Amino acid sequence: MDEIIQQIRDPKLLLQIEKVVPFHGYLSTGAFIGIQMFNIAKKVLDLQDGERIFATCETYNCLPDPFQVLGGATIGNKGLKIADSGKMAVIVNKRAPAGETSVRGIRIYLDPDRTKKYPELHAWYLNTGKVSHKEAIRDLIKAGEDAYTYEMVNVEVPIKLTKCIEMCEKCGESFVRYGEEVLCSTCTA
Ligand SMILES: [Zn+2]
Image (cartoon, rainbow, N blue to C red; front, top):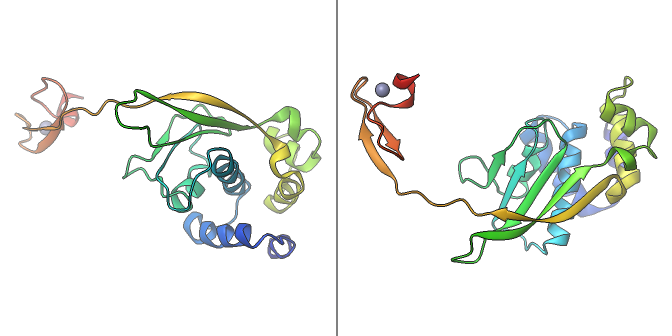
């Protein structure tokens, strides 16, 4: 893998890889795809460094991590959601202006029609052959944005519910309730 990284000349991309590797554990193909998707979103949405972003990843696999470590969109700060459909795709948007119920975002996906031109990447993507991360990433570097298709989409802004704290009548622990429930979800199940 090191020899692949050494071929990268873009210092910004190298810095991003340096941040993603310890966070994710290693440079996987999916994590590299996440980095490239983050950079497309950054460019198209004209994101400034440190600007708040919201990302909805369509898979749990690798992809969410670059958005957490490079974009600061985490599960805990509600910047990151996973809508798992098993797709190598992400929707990214900025914070909506006050009072708006929707905001323009970008949906980016790794497009099999485009990865066709890059045999190792394509075989990795469709799982039709044994391809190492090294080989797949080599193709991703070659392809750059050419492996992706993206379009602008409307993203609904989630309605902020009033937070009420309830004591569960069964286990006695406190929990956040949004409706009329008197038992926590653990005790309801
Ligand atoms: Zn309970």
